Image 1: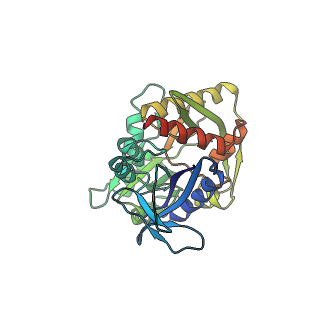
Image 2: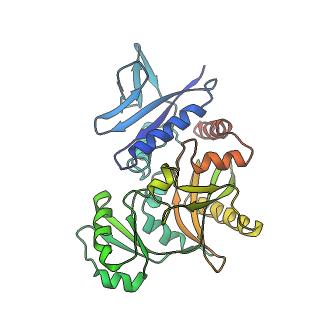
Image 3: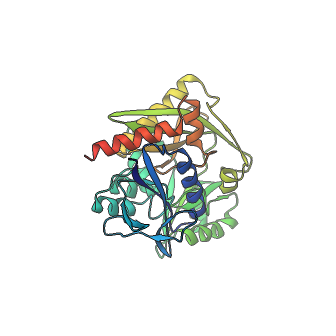
Length: 330
């Protein structure tokens, strides 16, 4: 008998729609001979199972179950694909820990740390060989340096983004000091903390990573060539980018990116599949951009591309990860 698993999607951030697209990808790859997947959407109206041809079915949060045709279905596993809150910041992980349901991401501490780009990169910068960009964190209602002082510290151009969030939502490239205040305001509309980072010139690459048992494995590296001034929301989800897997970099750099990705996986105590983004600067050294512990899972996202380039299938990889984590929970 197949085991019921939840594919958690939606959430409360600007990435809600992206999350639903990722969930559709995951649902298409689940091995139905082993698992019975159900889409669980979390939004402002509540937590509901969505089944075609049926009204939304409410989740009983006491034990993470729902009623289907008079039968109680209790989930044995959760595949979290909520980009943003509450899926990437530790909140949903804490709930699942309480009800005893294993899941595919890092735990509460891992997710809380990696959700804050500023704190995650500052933490990772303490490890040998990991270089991060200079950055300033602004808090809503906190003391804010003048635009001139920020530019003096970070230079121009610079990037302004929400400190928590992804998909380049509310992210701006600022080329003139006169545009900085507006960019900060846009980012604050998405998050109560804003990150300003120095501009990093070079070759942008991204590398996926996963673990089965005690073995952590890197996927092939993808080169990211945006058609816009940076890899923004349009580039990510509307095709304004060239994505080349494997990346057009030398074998030594490929091996370095893959090794750093595995090390970061260990440093943040990740689980499941993550993705780490870098820019290789002119000196040949990769600079860490950010760690994504709930990467996009649409059919055209980086991870499915890299899995295919590795000679694997998403169905087999997801099956291996789910079974591994179910076995660990026994």
